[in-house]
Amino acid sequence: MRKSRRSLPPLNALRAFEVSGRRLSFRAAADELGVTQGAVAQQVRALEEHLGLALFQRHPRGLQLTLSGAAYLADLTRAFDTLAEATGRLLVRPDTVTISVTPTVAAKLLIPRLGDLQAMLPDVELRTVASEALSDFERDQVDIAVRLTRPPFAADLEAQLLFRQDLVAVASPQLVGNAALPLSMEQLRSLPLLHDAQGHWATFLKTSGKLPGAVFNQTTLALDAAVAGQGVALACKAFVATDLATGRLVQVADAGTLGADFYLVRKRSVPARASVEAVWDWCLHRLLLPQDLATRAI
Image (cartoon, rainbow, N blue to C red; front, side, top):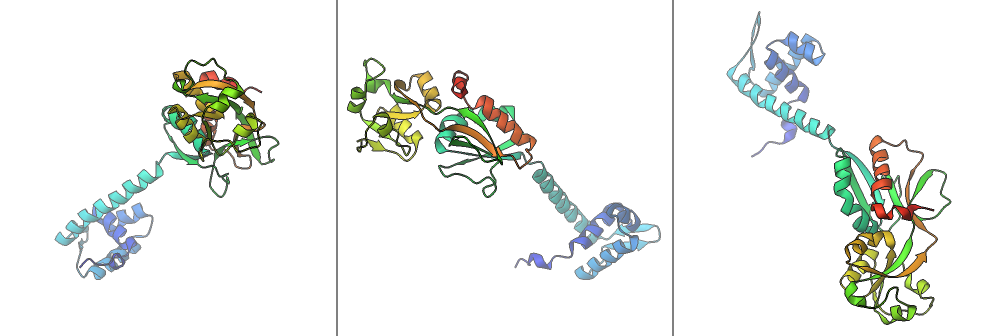
């Protein structure tokens, strides 16, 4: 039956024996441990009493390990080496930066560019919190957030415009066929509409009535449905830039710019770590495709 770890000898006594066994001298062990020679000898005697056997033969010119002591020393040295290696691995873990984004920002902008971030910042470990809920910087330990908002901002927040919320209506090329673009309002109403939690279709089509069509709780799901040819979706142009560039989607109408835009936000009261500063700069310069950097202009 395995003994409880609580029955182990005191750690200080084990350490005193391990160093003494390597150095074969209580004096040398005391110098390494930064204690007195008497304290080391006392710890070793206490360990021998605890175990009920002798670990050293004591001679005027130094120490000699007994057979039991030599075997025990080999095992203890491996154990202390394992502890040292585990502690070393812990201390050299990558610096973690936590960023809070919406699921659509994560899926359409951040995740496709993670390889670029890792190549540019190999020592940074990015932790992504993707949620529609507004994260709290302190409670959720968030370093940076991408938020759909508008000025003015609280005095304790630093915010920089990431990109404008320019809305476009998009659909698969197969859905619109040979129709001339942009589509008219009447043509749009005749096609299946894909709705998300933002609910921008009613504003764009200037109607207060309920509009038919599939409803999704996230914009990225509505866009996936649009790519699959199931209807027309409304989304920020930055989210569909790649699909437009590759031809998976086509822009069928321009829905205009809304009042709120996407900002990069962080706390002013917290001195920025170098890793946070690096991720902040990366987001500003690399989160958008080069052709979409114009969407940041005011």
